[in-house]
Image (tube, rainbow, N blue to C red; front, side):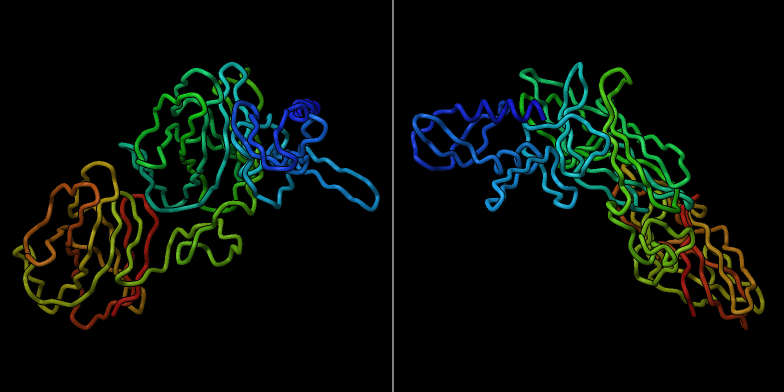
Length: 384
């Protein structure tokens, strides 16, 4: 409160050449505009407008002649505070609020949003993919240099730790992405320059993330900003979201999926385009007497930052009939139109159409197809 009052008293002494106008003043080195009234050579600042810039709130009740000043904005407003008016960390951080972090070499930090996802997230040359029992918490934030000298901003400028519903800590991946380019963030910020960034924390698939802590690189370099993230993270969506969790914070490990819909696995997004029975030879090998092949055509898109190998063991498929009897996937992957084996690297963001297949008796009709890549979650399709 004391520093707010000092700033108010300083602004009250600013001279103005107008009777009543929006005047640009300098606040913590940044130009801002607030209503000012000139009277007898003195400038009177609208305290409500000033407190809004400072991250607080001022209200005046004319009936009781009572002025009320709060030094922090109500949590329900969600309004960001102007840069250059960074607040010191308190007991609980607010999304959209600017905080001054690091005593020795200050940075201004603002958490903009957070979201859950089970899709791949790329940062530079790294691709982060959750396992079946995991999801990703993606944090979007802004960093500004409040100093008069240039400062390096990169992955170790701050630390991110979250606490899950079982009170277990999970550290950030130690990599920051530039929101504009998705490249690794390693930038020399000029004075007052701001950059938009993101990072990832791998967390359990089940349950909310109650707490986020944003910390300086070392424990003795200043206080910590603590955020209560319950109800503030963009939730997962169907079909990945567990319908028994109304908060959208739990990801299914086995996901009901539809044909012609991309599914996020590990390196690849995979789309089951069609299924069919054939009796022709695949990779030179025809089905046996009384058997046929159940063939699944896949469109695989490489979501990794580097080439990914696509071959017979990239995807693990399980086929089941109405009685629950399961059939093993054949140890060959063939091209989408050719009957030759497919085994090659796929470039980032490139697609390849391939087919997996199963040997089944001619009198058996498949009911469900389950598909996964490595340790990814399983996608289950209804088939005919």
